[in-house]
Image 1 (cartoon, rainbow, N blue to C red):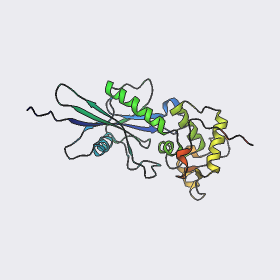
Image 2: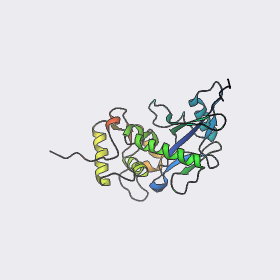
Image 3: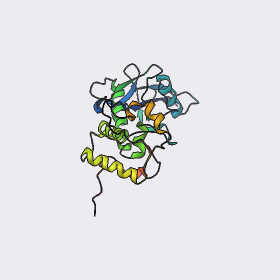
Image 4: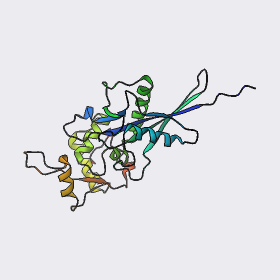
Length: 243
C-alpha cells in the first residue's frame, strides 16, 4: 500500500492597525502589515502549534502583538479560515489568522500599507486579506472589538474615524453617532479617564489636546469599561428616541 503524502502546514496572518492621526483621511487610516508585497506567513514546524507559527511570523515582520493596546485579555490572534488545498503531491493546509497591533513603525522586514485599491498583494494574499477584512469588519461592529484598534485611551472622534474607515460611516448623521457615543459613556460602557492621568496623556498625544490655534475645549478621553460592549453595535448607532 502506498504511503499517503504528508500534509504541508503553513500559516498566513493579516495584521491590521489604525492610524489615529486626524490628518490621515479615513480611507487610508486602516492599514495591514506587508512583507515584500505579501502578508506575513510561515511554515509550521513539526512540534509547533499553528498559533505559535503565526505569532512568530508577525514578530519577524516587526509588529508587536504582546504589547497591543486595549487587548483586555483577549487572544491576539483570531483564526479566520483553514484552506485545505490538495495538490498533485503533498496536501497543503494553510491556516489564516487576523490580529490587531499598535500603529507604529514596524521593527522588522514589514511595513504598514493602507488597505485600499492601491494595495498590491500576490493572488493568495489578496484573497486572504479579503476574507480577514470581512471577519474584522464583522467583529468591529461591537465596541469591545473596535477598541482593540484604538488603544487603551481614545476619544469619541477616534471612534467615529475608525467607524468610517471600517464601515464607510454611521447609518445616521455624525451628530447622532456622537450622541450615541455619549450614551455609551453615560451608561458605563465607555468611561472617562481619571483626571490624574489626563495632563500626561494630553502632553504626550497631540490629538488629545485642543486643535492648535482654536482655544477650544479639548476632547474627553475615554476607555472601554469591559462590560456591555458585546451588545453595543456600532454598525447602526442611533440615539434612543425620547419618550
